[in-house]
Length: 209
Image 1: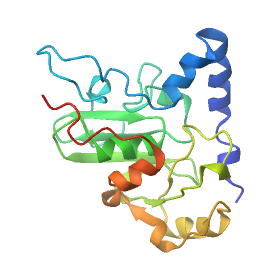
Image 2: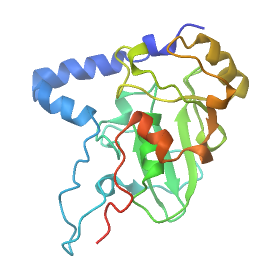
Image 3: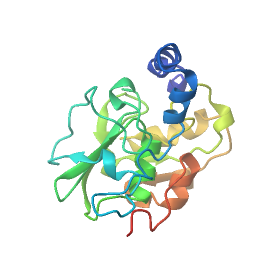
Image 4: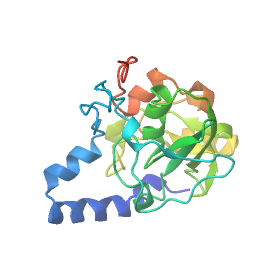
């Protein structure tokens, strides 16, 4: 298997070019770096908002939503529909949810959720097959060397696999560092330490009044 990171990010490259032609490269870069967007805008009661709150959407759970052009990643504000090789989403039990352009962004959201409700379902894109899979049953290879990739959406992301054996096989294919099966985790293992490998994560009290 060739490294999918070398062939899945054509959409990222196209979006970068379009962004620089349109609103300017600096504006596009601000969105890509996972800025917290509306974090400084208070809610209707004058309280600080959680930085991801503004992009929480309705999600009935049970089945994944279709990714559309009017959705924005809850973490970095980019458009998940532009990144089919990485896109992810989750649903809370209360009927709210979020979409993400990458599993790295989903990890940041899971580590610091703006919604006080358990996750009912989650989906992410299999690194091997490109299919949308059940993230709660997936196996994530935690890679950490951003210098080993070029042009990857949002810099670096964990590698999700539906099949544990595919995750194990990837350990030998990844040249960025020495990995072992201890570096394969599951959805419940995603915590702040894991998320901070890939994104800046809001403070634990973010959004508290």
